[in-house]
Length: 115
Image (cartoon, rainbow, N blue to C red; front, side):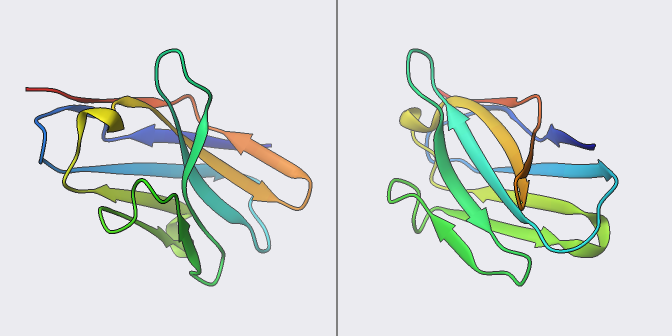
């Protein structure tokens, strides 16, 4: 079983930046994809960005050019650098890991964009 713990959420003004971190622990072997999802109040959870083991990244259209996902395989960690934040980015952000049919979710971290 793999555990994921997010950190770095908080309150930020529109136009500001935040960096989210996610650390994985447990039995971690082989290749896996990591991703960030988010869920705003009253909305479904949606994919924000994903990154494969060899660094191929993919983004939702709503965050392209503003968010950057990265990972450190040696630390079993994934990061989400968020810039030019908008009020629409307000949500709980979840870390996600997929390896074959096995998936794991973090507990989520709140990001609030407000003046």
